[in-house]
Amino acid sequence: MLKEFRDFAMKGNVVELAVAVIIGAAFGKIVDSLVNDIFMPIVGAVTGGLDFSNYFLLLSSLTGGAAAPATYDKAKELGATIGYGQFITVAINFVIVAWILFLVVKGLNRMKAREAAAPTPPPAPPRSELLLEEIRDILARK
Image (cartoon, rainbow, N blue to C red; front, side):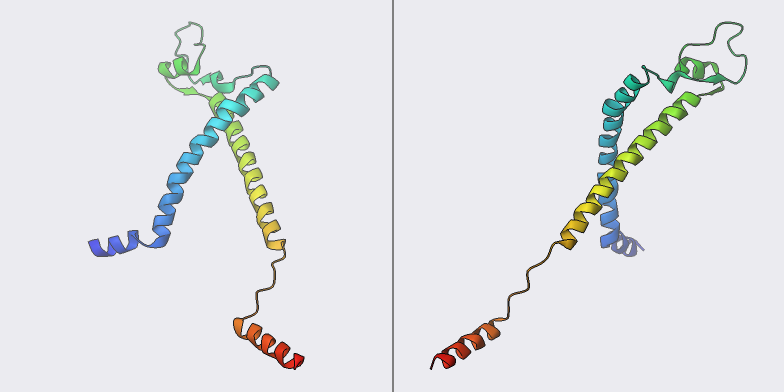
């Protein structure tokens, strides 16, 4: 059984999948940084600094008559809380990431289409044909 598992794990598709997962995880960090460090500040500037991450709803009167906490993290410490602002932030992140990946894939497809449309030169004739043409030319000159 161990030999069968080793044979399965060393098949090309499994190894390629493992490499793709590792590269995908690293790419995920790049995309996450792109979204959080570049695009979200732009979204914040356009919307006037709007930050959804601290929008929440306490499910019960857990504050004991006191004012509701200012942050979602503090509200979670009190108990059952719906953090709809976090969901909105994650949804915006998803839309931005999906749009960026769409543009990347569209660009790659366009590059592949250009490469496929580029004319390829005809293949060189085989050596035997070249030699026969030389013989023909020599005979024609005589």
